[in-house]
Image 1 (tube, helix red, strand yellow):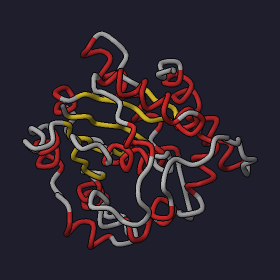
Image 2 (tube, rainbow, N blue to C red):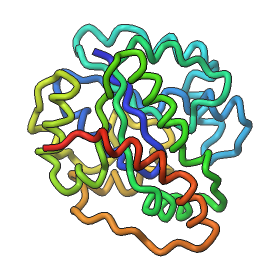
Image 3 (cartoon, rainbow, N blue to C red):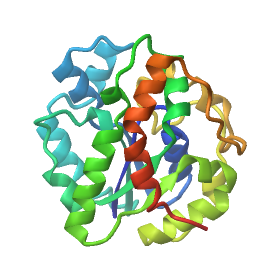
Length: 240
């Protein structure tokens, strides 16, 4: 099974990848399109050159690798994808060959967290519209809604929500998914040294409680713009 988990930034996505990496049957790939995204946009992200050197810079080559069979010794191939990495012109046909799932988070905490790491942000940077487009593509192809999990639900009830997600994916829940050792892990992208300080200090999912922080006007406008996409996907979220 190839699981493409689609998330925006600052969305519990690395913790979810860390959770799946604890399964003995799962191989994880961290942000497959990141190098291609940087190569195509020319954005000077931290560790820009290291990311491109360590990854696959051609989007077509990434797509082919994403649709390839998982490593024989681990039958579940979990891919942590960032929706904003899927630029116009990047191939999407490969998504028809995998099991797509969607990790969502309310826009207010996403934006509050995002601006702690980035000086500027626009709606496209947090990937809500693209997440909905990918969801609709997967739903249209299969005739049913693909699995959606809300990060607030994961934090409120990790065992119940992860069990529901695994059931929706057609795999058995493994209690090992609930905790991990602190520090870097083999599945982390090279960029982990800059971005993953919080996950490297963690041993499991954070405490429950998802605040809606007060945002300055410029961020509140972006939250209002993208909230319909979040609300749309949230109605399909897995429930315990």
